[in-house]
Image (cartoon, helix red, strand yellow):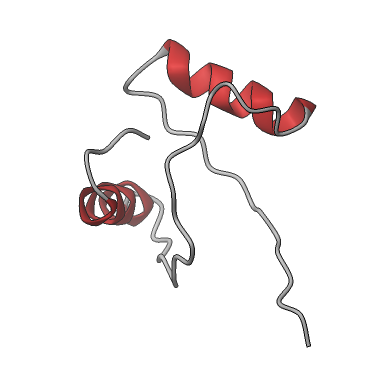
Length: 68
């Protein structure tokens, strides 16, 4: 999903999720994707699909762990 700012992204994402009665709980450490960086096969495919169509919405789950 493309947006010109984090606020616009969250607004557009909430509207999209509302169609399925899903709710956005939070976003942390958001940043634009660098299409030239290698994120691994699965994520690279997601990026390529999204770059091919500006109206494409691709959701995924990313996990990160904070150090103790």
